[in-house]
Length: 254
Image (spheres, helix red, strand yellow):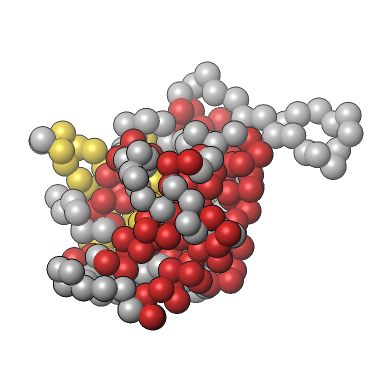
């Protein structure tokens, strides 16, 4: 499969301190990859480096074969962390998604019929069309995340970058959200790179995992990640991974 994102031996510094150390990582066409690790491990910095917001000290970054700052606008759709968003915005669901279409517009320029069509299609793809006129702040946490995904999709991107997208969701909403992500990948031929600290939740839906704590400790299939060496290198020595197979009645946890 073609690589849509490629990082080769990337080092990134903040205020003289190394945040990312010799990171090599790929995202292939129509693939879902999750970067997992504890807080402060460099996950969000990695996304900013991919988007060209942070320049590497060493190494190379390519998106669709180009340096990040030369990638055409709209190629990447981005969902930031919840902490960077204002959930009290006095706007409708439609208005939130429309922000993506206004990004490249001139001052006072109105939405076109094509813009409105793309907004409607984005809302439909995340099953939020019936809520288009609702106040954004009145939605549940899961619904808000769906709307913000729609905002990213309104650009018709090739790649989605999601930074801790399931934070604040309960177990049922989280599972529904991740199933939606897989459905979007299949329906829209998206390549998705997703940051998370919840290795158990994302391992069920991704094609590959990258365990990050300043450097990559593992990069491969989820089933191959759950060794003591891989987990302890990222999360510490006193960490255990427990799986529950709903199809196995009375089986021991692994």
